Image (cartoon, rainbow, N blue to C red; front, side):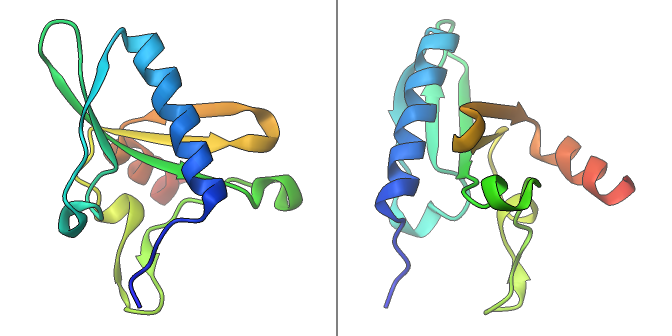
Length: 116
């Protein structure tokens, strides 16, 4: 059975998309085909035509753990996922309990997590 996001994750994704559209004065333009969905979640066309691909993650566990969770491996398939497999330019990490969105470069976030 193929994986599908939870209603809560879809709600978080919609909130991030709305916030980025407003902040960047952009329009959502690209929804990847299902086979490419593992590489990014959504693309935006910025006012001057630049396209930004965004990976959106909603972190529900942060409320109970006090930590942010960044996925980098699919433990069922033993293959890279999340930060290590995304083709996105921007990683958007939404923490509902803080009503906060962390935006960063996935490569920079990987480097930081490996070195700290």
